[in-house]
Image (cartoon, rainbow, N blue to C red; front, top):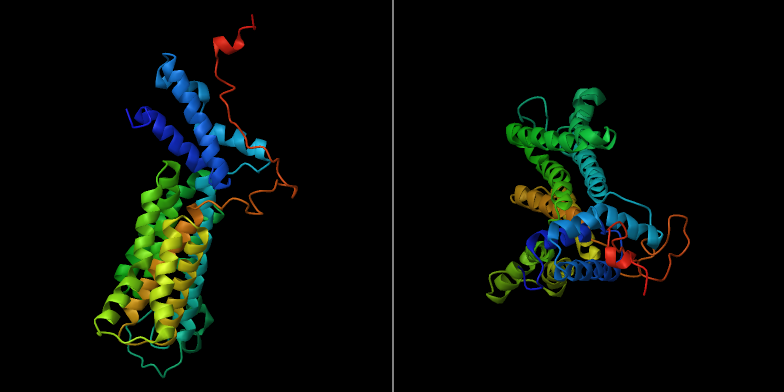
Length: 340
């Protein structure tokens, strides 16, 4: 038994219910989960087993669907929505990398060893648009699950992540540029799988926030030890920025994850524009930031009062009363008995 007196199977059910209600304002979700928790506790106190109670409630997805109906929200499959979002981001990252490899990086030739210097024209000008379009194949592989049948999407995302990782590892310097795409592909493959199993609770967000804040902590320590000199602008950019974004992520604010993803994309673009000795480090770190921010944004629920989640599918405000997904499907002899 846990501290609240519920067996682990009931706590797992409540976590799954919380995960299925990601598109509902957080305060409302807490009330819904509290209602269901109270019902389970009352049923257990009456002598019923946890399996009987959960069977009467039905699947967590069905309870979440009922809650959305009472809120006037469209029914959504959260893991599928997370997968679509991350696949879209992965496809966009693939297009960005393809543009950089074929146009902005004259020294990168994906079909032969790197022998050119930085002053030579890029792949598009030297080898023509046909060869340059080959750089879009990884992006098309990342986007394939968006148009594939629903049943094969998880397997296609996993296969794409494996293929992109093998390409990034085996293609030499060119493969280095596709590591951020491989990271996004793995996020699109694994995050929906984890969400469907109720993973990604408070500690996940705390760890993510710590990772996001780490550059700010490192720069602050180096600055305090006179190892690195930063002015006011540098302190705001390299210290205050990561610390603020990390705090927002730790407290599950989607804004923090959005800022993290945008910062990662910006670091990648700047690394590509100003290629230097630490290009690979900044490129890979920007890719990590982008993948982490996109994944966190996809799985985080909006705050209360969000105009998107507080309206129904036709644009009208949802009902003010909070839903109570009571176990209407459960057979309760005492409730069914007539009064008196």
